[in-house]
Image 1 (cartoon, one colour):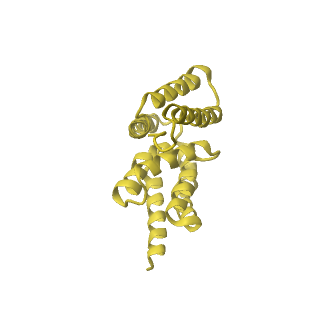
Image 2 (cartoon, rainbow, N blue to C red; image 1 turned 30 degrees about the vertical axis):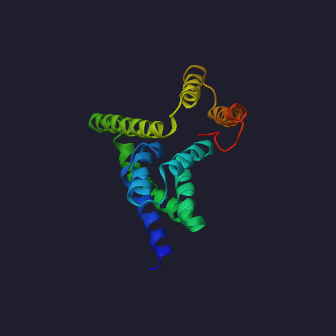
Image 3 (cartoon, rainbow, N blue to C red; image 1 turned 90 degrees about the vertical axis):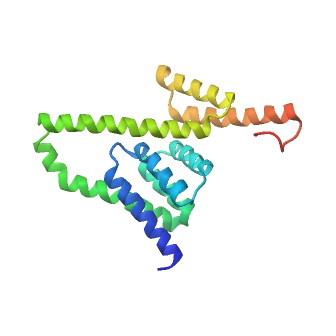
Length: 192
């Protein structure tokens, strides 16, 4: 098997396996994807992963599919994006097809409802872990903490649409960079 085919097969397997065992959507997959792409395989740096997650959040659509497209593309181009998306799509599709009637017949089952209560708690822990890991990578200075805090307040208390916050982040980042250039007087030191 060629190196490219090996990488495509690895992308398919990673997304298939994670999609098969991860409940709670794409955000719950983040720590596991980071482990595979950054720590285990070295395909991306932490900075690349953070940039990809930021871009993924700005895209419309299903988070897990966006991750498949972006991460697969970064690793192996268009074929990598296709391999990752197909791998990530298959387990939930098959599960829905096979389990839809069973779940409908058991929807009022107290035991099943309690089991899903536990699953939801576990998913919250996975999402919190992803937030903490991303926060460690992103929130390194006062500017980042201030912007993150303002965005949090805007979402929680004022229900501001995320796209406006992404645009605010872009403009704020550019403005902060311009301020650093003006303050330091040279481009090379700004942004550090």
